[in-house]
Length: 253
Image 1 (spheres, rainbow, N blue to C red):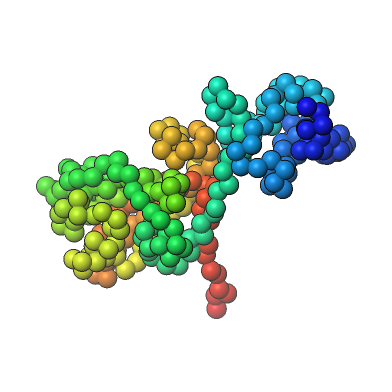
Image 2 (cartoon, rainbow, N blue to C red):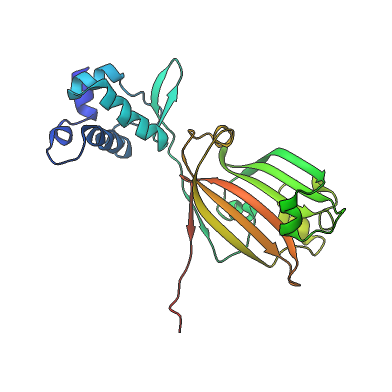
């Protein structure tokens, strides 16, 4: 076992002085083994007892290092089976200067997409929906809540609200919401988007296939027609390990 471990985890980096806490050095050594390919997708991590004995550290130190890598998505625990190297996640870059739908974004990258509907229909609006959409009393709201999946990987939970005036039949949306709105000349032309960091909680963590507490991106979007009227209010939760939002900046005069 020690020979097999030595080929994966060189002890030099663990025994180096000034490298920070032991658990951090072990974490970095394990991460290097994964990113370099010495530990590949699907490989089982040695048992905590074996790692602790090999590295001459406590099992508490091993568990803390492994917990960090599980939280970051590099390792995955399977009950009754052990700990394994997780499938690498391809990151998606989303420009902030272009107003497009999720379906359009993924199609442009050649990724196959699908949705798992969480809620879809007409409802009496909540006070927040009435305020954000500028709805009059008695107006119904269309809600489209779905899990967005690309290449069979869950990427985001999207919860969109619109006045029933713009979307009288929510079931008409099968893929792209913006494509459906374009048919009735109600596609938004601009939007204000607010992005904030968050930690993913249950039940969203289960839907996104990430550990509870994993990094996420909370995004709130308010979209407008050319007339200035609000057409869409959307709250989304993206996996933090799959999305990078990119903005181009220019020097102001």
